Image (cartoon, rainbow, N blue to C red; front, side, top):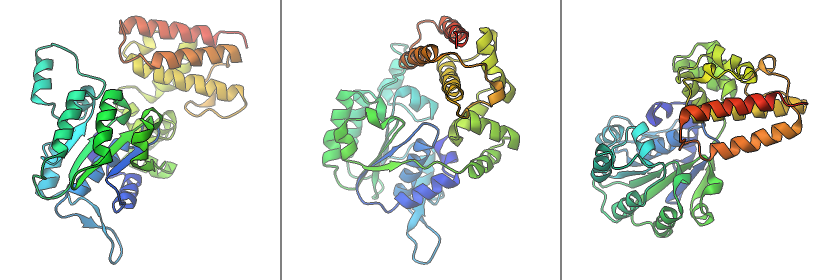
Length: 343
């Protein structure tokens, strides 16, 4: 799902309207994954660059939405706006259809390296050089950083120097799912905005508008912990609602065939949700991601705690598996062992 598509979500539109007239040149959007940080960031960039922004409701209301029709809006929609730069890992840029630099694209085409999963210092230098230029279309210039936590210390410190004294009409919007991993000095130089959670009925209606059946929308919203963007991503992954409901018992059996088509990151995320819900039921609380009847009997606290610790460690390196197939087998085996531990 692209940010432009998600920007029509009503909770994204409300946040954009609230942030449209905020002062300052750097904005930090933060919160859990699946709440639309990138969607809101791109929607704000479109508004700032739009040549005919649309005013909100009410007499004398300020512009709070891009028109979607002017030359700037078309350029941004095509990811070719000369006054827009994105700072993203190359893998994220490819997933979101942003063009790479000519040099980076050539290196990847020649198979000299794989797409970066961090924001590269070369891209940061290009963005800093862009910041010094005059606006090509005479309006604002925008730098969008996502996921902002993918900056290492070198790239973060390079960005910090420009954040301290942003030239002209340059505006920054940083979007992150892990604000705690950003340098405190970067956080302090940004206006901070915590992403809003949509109400359940609103999220279900939006998911239905994206083509999901009402019952499936409700099921995927639960599986995503109430995060609509994550729910849509899960629904579009090829996984069925029935498969999700059977997942806990499959892990209790050590059934690797049920997850043979999953990626390691997808499996780790699902296992973390399962571990969370088992800990919740062990404490007498309601599960969040699975229906109570789908869960096996929770193991004892020592096994749950160790399993959770192991999953956190695996999550930190899951994007670089030595052998994805072996990792899947190891994760399923680990889950089965934990789930059969004595209460």
